[in-house]
Image (cartoon, rainbow, N blue to C red; front, side):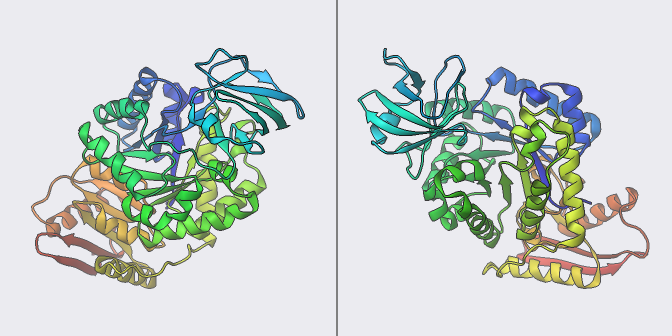
Length: 458
């Protein structure tokens, strides 16, 4: 069984039920709806497609909304090809100046002569030569096709913007109404950012939604430990990180972020350019495969594919190939271990994993909340963690954690009964049988105690 999880992005390439269904059948654990693109009608269509495929196949799929956040973007214009050495005028979109529109005035109050501007994940770069109140003249360093609504970044600088925009607040109403499991929070700079978004979602009625902090700015990297503590999970957003830091530093920054999340026993997902070559090709490159192997070794919970499935030519093949590579990597690589957390529950979870690995036991747990299972997942057992849960919402939250296979077994009177029902379910499905060695574990919050049983099934 594949232990690491796959999150796929929806978009024009999979705006079709048959494609979504094949992606679910091929191993997609979660779908991300990027609220930087499309509108609520399209997002609702995708939710319907995902739910239909999930119900038809009997596979619970996690739904993740990705807030656009305080991003500066180009405005609307006809795509234009630009060349190296060309001069170009960028203008505030509400001004009457000729040039390429930019949607946020903070851009023009932030830039200075000599600044380097990166557009569309760095496909286009330029140097600022002249700065005016609502415009700037720039010289193109790297040219390409300049397209509308692409992101604009100042290398080494961060725009002084509030963590939530009016658009985000409006999108939160949609999120609250549509039963999302997680929200990705863009451009997280500190733990207060997470607190602000969590409170805003609660005001819209989304009280139990998980928050995944996207780390993509220098402040986010600097404050990674406090962000890992406040958030419910971390996304290593290599695209924007690569526009703020020298590219040769990214592997160590990636390692630092992953280690911080793992120390807090929070799920960590690696994003951007996982199998980027598959936008145009039906197979990944050798370098991309090696990149996945390295991330498995570093101990990520899973991978987020973005353009590969949203606009690429081979969205289903991306899932098939990524699943295939992960499963092969698992045969040869043991994820790096982490320092023991000072949380007492985590120490017990580590003991469960160590014992299971030593004796080759299957791990069966029962959970009413995600905590005990996530602690076990945090220590990266070599086998799946079969976790019985009472509610679908808990199952879909656990679905992005390393190794956890959530099973909806219904409400039980207590943890002992929950473990019996979960074991019975696994026997019925043929996952467990006579002769198997099993460690069964559960956490009783009412009695403040643990159940840990080692047994050989008869």
